[in-house]
Length: 86
Image (cartoon, rainbow, N blue to C red; front, side, top):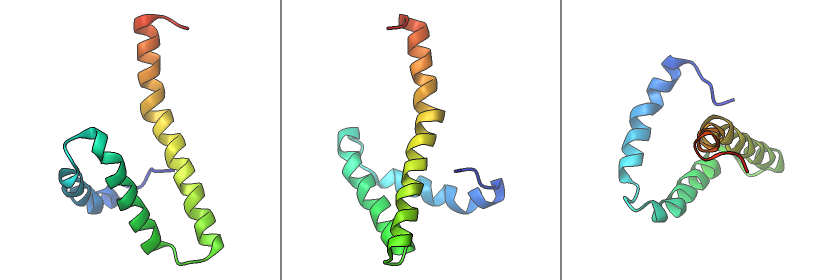
């Protein structure tokens, strides 16, 4: 779950905003930069051990699913409403 207490979010939000400002303006160039940032963070946080790598992979899968559930699915629902179902 990506949900942490609001007071815990405050310690990250300004750093995230600064990081996002440094990303390329061209959205087609952002993917490689995000991949580098996320990979670098994971390599720093998780010591080399299969158990830790397994945890990291599971966490990334949960991030993917939560992004789909919270961001993509509502967008798709809106477009289905706008254009009709398949």
